[in-house]
Structure formats: structure tokens, C-alpha cells
Picture 1 (cartoon, rainbow, N blue to C red):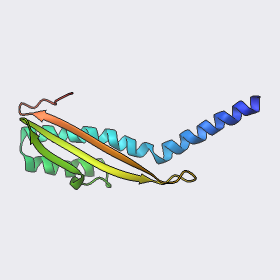
Picture 2: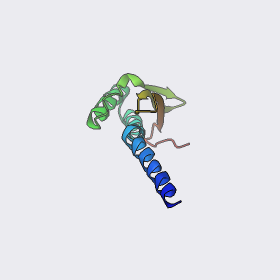
Picture 3: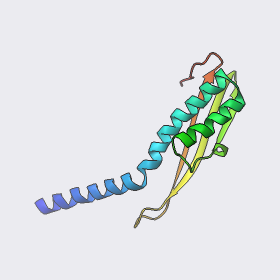
Picture 4: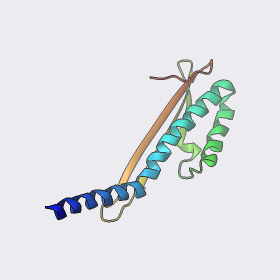
Length: 119
């Protein structure tokens, strides 16, 4: 019985390690992109749309996220708010599991007076 419990714990550890190695970097980038879109929305509210478009490029380079491009992002004005949204897909191929597509989307909005809109 003790060997079975050890075997189950080892299996969980291996599965957790595989998840960390293959999937965690993309989820980390997802949370980083939430900060990026907030920054871009605030930049747009403070300055102008061209400056916000430049901010996307600068933030992606600064944070070394090279598989997400400014073309994955959209800047639109909606109801007096400056909305930045980014959507992207990543195909991950862990061994023995097969391929898996991860879909991500983040969005942030700022008002003209420089406040982030929270929902």
C-alpha cells in the first residue's frame, strides 16, 4: 500500500512538472499581457493613439514576448473609453500528450481622465 501511495505521488509530481515546463510560460505571459494592455490604455488616455501603438511594441520588446505582435492587439474607442484588447493562440506539444492549442484574450479600458475601468 505504501508503494502505491508513493507511485501516485510521483505521478502527480511528474504531471505537475510537465505542466510547469510546457504550459506555465504561456500563462505567465497571459498575466504579463494584462499589465501591458492596462499600460497601453493609460498611455492612450494620456497622450494619443499613435503613442499607444508605439507603447505596445515597446512593452512587448521590454518584456521579451516575441510570439505576440502588435498585430494581435486592437485599439478602439468605445463609449468615451480607450479600449486595448489583445488575442493570441499558442500551440503546445508536450511529449506523450499530443498537441494542445491555448487561446488567450486580454482587455483593458481607461477613461479620458486616466482611470482604469474595472468591471
